[in-house]
Length: 90
Image 1 (tube, rainbow, N blue to C red):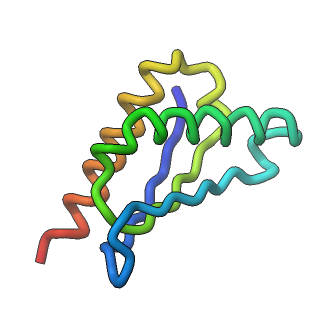
Image 2 (cartoon, rainbow, N blue to C red):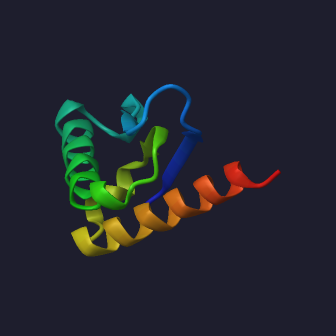
């Protein structure tokens, strides 16, 4: 239903996780884009302790607003795990 994209850069000099959000105008008006960013920020905050160090860019489509919050967290974690695992492979 929702589309999440996660880009990951392994940690360099920073020791923690840094997260940025990319929500384009194609997803809707300012209210919709801000709602998506707030939901993503809340999901990351709840799973922040388990987030591997590095830099993350999280992009989301308009369908994210329709997902229940627990489903959003599950999909986001799945995308983060897949991205970080792929980046760690030689």
